[in-house]
Length: 220
Image 1 (tube, rainbow, N blue to C red):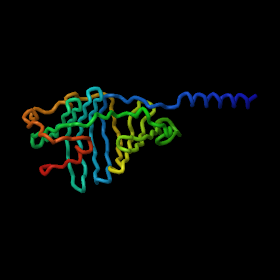
Image 2 (cartoon, rainbow, N blue to C red):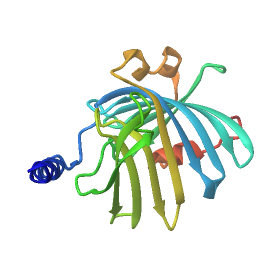
Image 3 (tube, rainbow, N blue to C red):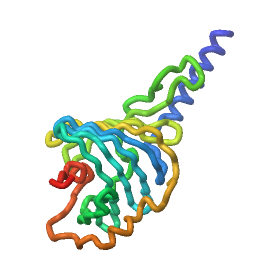
Image 4 (cartoon, one colour):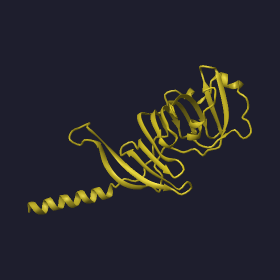
């Protein structure tokens, strides 16, 4: 009888696990946090504080790091709906305005992503010692790329993203210190001195976020 009860419990647990198989979830549309980006092929390492608004398709990034053994500091405001990006320098009270033609990429799990595994980061030995996450894999046909993403099971918050194409090589992004919501809405408005910025020059177009980081002007 005890064996039957034990078997029944195992079957119930198996059915429950099958019913609760993770599916691509929807991440919070408003977030503030920090990320690190490692791009070995271009000898780029960046540490960034970001403010993210998926509803308005706006991103503010304050980055510092190393690019080909040279340090850099960037303050970028990317307004995807307006198709404009500002490069802001409070030190020089200057602002450069560029055309932004890249599509907005929300921080989320693609719908066609495949669940690789559900794991615990850390330990399950005691309360608070581990974090339940889901690992997702997939391909991007447009770029012939591959990705590996890790998101939390509860809250659907990003942990890591690993992306690869033959052109770029591996790009690793790690997220931490995330806060849901926007702490300061003024982050998405350029400072007053940007009002005097010259109009976007024809041909001066940014097509993706990494291109924006990799652009190094002589005066930076």
